[in-house]
Amino acid sequence: METRTPRRRVARAERERQILDAAVSVFSLRGYQNASMDAVAEVVGVTKPVLYSHFGSKEGLLLACVARVRTELLDVTSAAAAAADGPEDMLRRGTLAFFEYLDAQKPSWSLLYSEASVSQAAAAALEEIRAQQTDFIAGMLAAQAPDAAPQRLAGWAHVIVGACERLALWRGSAADGGPRMSPAEATEYLMDLVWTGLAHRPS
Image (cartoon, rainbow, N blue to C red; front, side):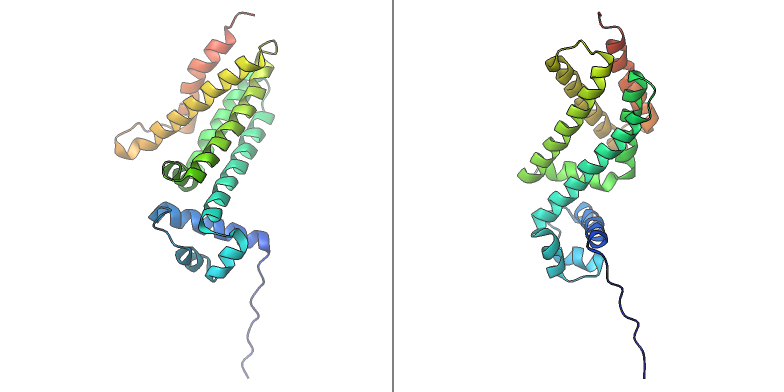
């Protein structure tokens, strides 16, 4: 009599990671509107009801993908800044970590930007990521300018976040004739302008 090897039960956290990985792949390839939960389930190797039991809906799955990006981005930039030996190095390392993360997680980032233009929920989630990074950068800038008013720190942080975002999109257009630059080069472009101004601000 043939003995069947029992299937290994996958922990919930691991299953959710698998589903999110598959969703990013399918959504990025087909676009959120054209992608189906059936396609995601097929990539994971589960039934469609399993997806719904974890995320509730297709939009819930998309927002979970975005939430993972938000958490990971804060983790990598925070870790980079924590290893710095001064305010300038903190901003440089944090910015470099941002660009390196985008390169490592390009499908997730591309998905976020493409869906933010058509999905109100994705657009709101992108704004949450911007707000998170703005608060983080404002905290870093306070180390360089402890006497600056909170509003000024927030303003600088918004400028940096906007500049990083536009620079990231410019880098991402390389396939369409845009520039080819490494994360380190992109970081230097930002530091050329941002740190020059901060380092020479009147005390």
